[in-house]
Image (cartoon, rainbow, N blue to C red; front, side, top):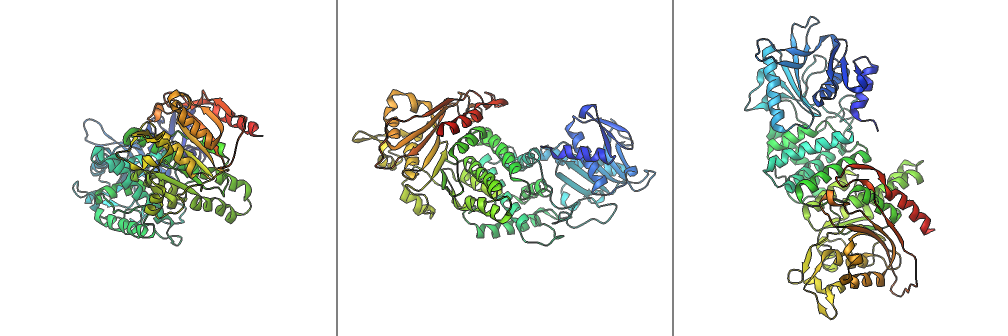
Length: 592
């Protein structure tokens, strides 16, 4: 799919703003003929902003200059773009400093000071620093290093007009919020998280929690009822102080928290200055109008990097998640559970499958199409996650994907089920209730009876007539998942370490599984399947159907396959080969 920058290049060439040369390696700005290397990330930012200056701000091309030399500067220094008030280019009006998208907050602050310094040298009344979607426009005469908000304006004027109080407004062809591509959205999230993480000032999971709160407010503001032409609240006004921005954003948060208390129970725990910076990263973009596939991949990639890089959690690769969900043939009236849901990947892929069905079955009726998948998201998707912060991430992920968050709970899925229902006030987490379970339970941890008395209530927590002192989490999850499934019809896809399938000492676990379920399929995964994502245990995907209590099975066939290629290699790089697609087609034939 064409990304945002590729589209700008094509539109810019068609309108005669620039030419792209050497198979995209160089750009020639017109009419000046100035050429630069387009492989430079900063040049991409300048090219996009040059396009905006002509297209959205309506400045005449003959009054725009690139690489303007600063007089009386040693060593030589140049302004990236200067806009003049006159055709003779004698009266500088706006000085632009361009930096690559994704620079740190400290680098951005330094760049804003450089923009101001250049504007002062040229006696230009306005300056702006641009780093992708993060932008700061300033009045040169008002600038003070200690109080930058006094000089900060919402944006440069359009075509020498007045400075506006707000910039972004609903329904405006130029100034409504911008839809991002996957890489842009991921960078916006990374910049925002880095602001809150502050290089280690906060625990990364706490920073992520605060980011989720801000995204929650952002989406809520976008979906608020407002007329075309009304301004959004999630933005920074001209000369607005950080405390004022904080009050306005916090008001929306408190209002949203009251309406939806299960998502966030705590107040915002960040400084006004930090919130001001994050709003600067996100104010120009839309999350609610960005298409679901783009949001899904961008958030998944961002969280994948986050989980394996900073939080110590491991992440199930999307290729494996997608395959497991497809194998389950989920329908829109199925009740679907992941009792170890992490950030919600399995649930979101289940939602995607039902959304595809909606496109096929209800394509001629938009209202029925929306209800088809939205009702499924709201009423049929369930998740349990032991870590409260990660559970909130899952809820946030569901909200970003247009809901389904109300049935995600923060709880220990191995805890007594009655206690779970009482504590969560959600009666759906009960035995014999779910049509489908898709999960990758935590491996390797020991549940000790001395710490968790519930161990004694598990059949797999017993050794003959004696209670075991401890048991592996993945073994207990097998029993709990089977309990959750509907008798006779409930089906499960579960990632299990190969030791459970082969070690002689674990024969009792295999016996338990085969007594209570029909094994449908076993797919052996490569040794490296989870190595790049934080866990290195050789594993398989096991698919089962829960037997009815009175059901007796004779001999039956089990579909078995080995996946040597799964769409990425041992280093995590993309691999063109993916055996899982072929295995899925073979399984469909096998079932017939």
